[in-house]
Length: 207
Image 1: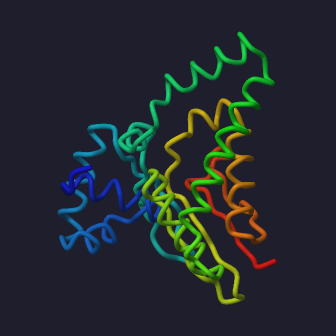
Image 2: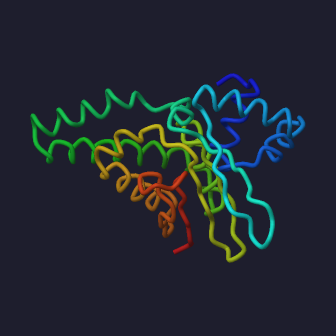
C-alpha cells in the first residue's frame, strides 16, 4: 500500500483503532484542520466515518473516526469471495469431514513451518516476537509486547483470511492451537474480529 496521506490514515486507524482528527494530524505531522479536510474527503469516498461519543465529565462530545467496511477492504483479504465459495462447495460436495481434513493439513504444515522459523528463539519473549514478525509478513499486521505481570500480548490488527474464518470457525481454532504449540505456552484469545472486535488479541503466559 502506497504511503499517501489517505493510506497513512487508513493504516493508523486500522492499527490503533478509532482516532480523533487532532491525533491523526499529530501522527501525520499536519494540522488538525488539514487532517479533518483529508478525513472529509475520505468520508466522501466511503472509506471512513465519524462517530460522536460522549466525553467523560462535562467535556464536549468527541468525534472519533472509524474505518468503514469499504475502508477495511483496502487491506488484503486473501481473495475473500473465492475462498468462501470454495469452502461452501467443499462442504456441499464432500461433507464437513473433508473441511476438517483440509484444516488439519493446513495446521500441520503451518506448525512445521513456524517451528522451523522459531527454532533460534530460546525463550518465550523471543518466540512471541518472532511469531509476531511471521504473522505480519503473512498480512496480519501483528504486534506484541510484555505486560507488567510477565505475560505477553500478541495482537493482530487485520485478518487476511477473514472470509475463510467466517465460513468456518475451525480456522480460528486451529490457529489458536498452533500458537500454543509453537510458543510452548498458555495462549488465550481475549479479542476476536469475528466476534465484532476490531482486532484479534492473545494473552500468552508461561506454562
